Length: 213
Ligand code: ADP
Ligand code: AMP
Image 1 (spheres, helix red, strand yellow):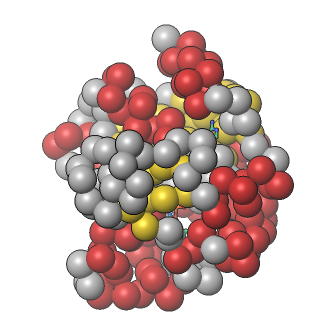
Image 2 (cartoon, helix red, strand yellow):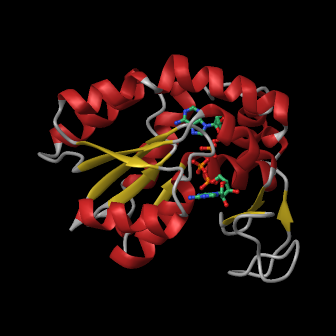
């Protein structure tokens, strides 16, 4: 099963993708996590990606498409995967579609998580992320058991540089201009499913599992 998580930054894609990954034994593939791991390790890719990410801009397609294609061609992705944060524009979606079609394959579900912009800002400034394992928390909504420490791997949690309010506003603009058109793109393909992302995270998960059943 191949799933795409759609929705604004902060809609809860990563949170749900983690839960889907666990229940269905599928890898959670987040291009944002791959970039952050590269930044942490000081790679050339990380340095280049950071200059865009810090401004709330998309990393250029030449870089992003390659890292995504490399990732999904790995052994653990052969029975499917959950894409979180990719595609983020129509050209990326077209490259993915074409690559899958060449293998006689396709995406099964594109799940759009709807959350209004005013809620997004509150979520993002309260988000805390683990750069080691990609887990996300929220200081009020989803706190870790021990403040500042990841429940899953014990590493330190950070406030992402791009989760500051000004950058979040830029990211929302980029989302509306470049990513939102994907909703119509997948609707036309007949695989779009919409969920109300403002609900409690377990209720959102229930809706998603009903879609995937
Ligand atoms: P995305 O991957 O779409 O950017 P995240 O999954 O990181 O979003 O969620 C953004 C923030 O909102 C995180 O701090 C997360 O803990 C919190 N969050 C996720 N889902 C919910 C929910 N249903 N209700 C309230 N807060 C949520
Ligand atoms: P995310 O963790 O999905 O919120 O992504 C964080 C940042 O990484 C984004 O604001 C972009 O700068 C960059 N990024 C992640 N995925 C992509 C993508 N598919 N295309 C371009 N840039 C991306």
